[in-house]
Amino acid sequence: MTLALDRTSTEAPGAFSSAVPETRAPQGIPAVAGASLRVPLVTGGDIGYANLDHAASAPCLQAVRAAVDEFLPWYASVHRGAGFASQVSTRLYERTRDILRRFVDARAADTVVFTRNTTDSFNLLARAVPPNTSVVVFDTEHHAALLPWRGRNVRRVGLPRTRLAAVSVVDEALADCPPGPRLVVVTGASNVTGELLPVAEIAAVARKHGARIALDAAQLAPHRRISLRELDVDYVALSGHKLYAPFGAGALIGRADWLRAAPPYLAGGGATKLVTEEAVVWNSGPERHEAGSPNTVGVYALGVACEQLAARWDAVGEHEAELLERLRKGLSGIPGCAELRLFDAAVDRVGTVSFVVDGFEPGWLAAVLSAEYGIGVRDGAFCAHVATKRLIGVAGGDGQQAVRVSLGLGSTAEHVDRLVLALRQIAARGARWQYAKVDGRWAPVGDPRELPPFCA
Image (cartoon, rainbow, N blue to C red):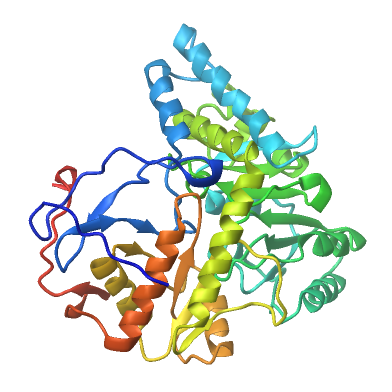
């Protein structure tokens, strides 16, 4: 494997270089904005940015940016505006509900409530479940799916090392629940390892006990088709900022009865049908939980992104599978590198890999990769502290943080090769620059790079 770092910029060392016109996405996948972004290196010059942090927030699709630019002159109030622009905005806002139903293959009666993100969606659902609902959730879940559930009826169970045992653990936990409503909360793809959990099998167990199941699809939705019907799940939560639509919208999609019966998530205009001096009559549809002026632009962007992905799943899957194989093969050759895994046996997974390298602090590694190689990765515990700490121990490490590489539509083979080469070089000779902790984060000492002008 060979790689020559491109430092052809004529800018002064450490200066910021604007992006050049963007290149076509490989293999017919949707193109992302910023595909040709160049970032400064602490050692001088600049380089094309290798974005390997899609699991945190994915870049914006070019098609989404173009659609939003086209819509912005028409942007206006929704639902109650008499003007023509308001009619346009309302049409796009409501049409997106149908787009999301199709995107997750929802049932005809399922409702779509627009939220800010997956975290917001699960907090909404947590406030909508009937009183005394028993909730079963793996303690290795992302915090968005783990933390909203509180009280004595919440059963947090450990995730075993096999998929079959994971299903059995849920079965046992549900059997131990008191009479009454029951809900299982499970992620589709781990945000730490990318591994897929046995959602359909867990749903079958839930049905046996008369329980409902809520799917955290934040990491699954950008990578795979989702079918609520085939998986037999009741609710799904997803985030636009992970679906290449970073304009602040998400959604909770699923059965309407609990949501219709619950108090409004927020009290305010839009959630009300009638307000008098003595009483309030709340809406019964999804608007019941969408008080205030909605994020119309974000909702529209989310719908456009979902349509773009749905039309190209085969190309998206091939692109990611090739890069994931290349990445894991490269990491396996790094001295002292250990990959984190939920399950002992190989399972299907999306393009996310977390690892530790013996002798190197993850935060330091991430800082070096960014400053000296132009590579963006994630370090830390990824808002899944229990899972990350436990998996590091299984991998033979003694820390509580790791490095995470997450692939997506903005990733290329060159990005993966550059990462692998950089890790080899760092393992062999260390960094070329000095680093120190600033406010708890590693950073280059005397960093000469300049932020772009719009940050001033």
